[in-house]
Image (cartoon, rainbow, N blue to C red; front, top):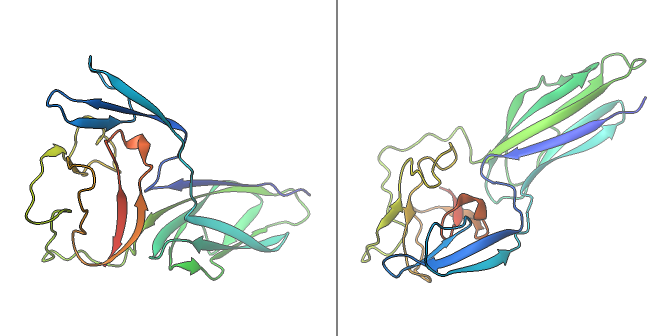
Length: 219
């Protein structure tokens, strides 16, 4: 009997990347502004076509026998991630351990995390899996005494363009508590506290912000 396996991956920190347009214009104060959405302005707007190349950082792989598959995870980040795996559909199959289940994956390749097999090998069986992940180790507790610095040199000051719950683009769970700071091009970016940067993304055009650089920090 033919086995059908479908993987659907949802990353909590990344949006799908497509070829998009970048809009460049000067605002009322004469400052350059950048957006992935057509701006509502009477000023001259420069439009550039942007091609964003997707990169996979975390994915599920399969090995083992046809009637009893084993699954492991590749983590291409330099820090840990938590991944949740669940059945989207299933018929005449079981998993060991039972799904849905969350796993913490260190950088590199994990050991076998779970197995999927048919309950009755003489009957048709099929399933589809869904997984999603987030950067970081969920067992690490927040330190209320930690001091966070602004992400730029301490002798400089810059205005906040958009803060918590900003109506322009901070409208979902991923960026509800983000803060957008207006800084000139080539301003040095400093870490908020000591740690290891595990990702920098300069092609995140779905955010609607001017120039988005995303960095994960593992203390």
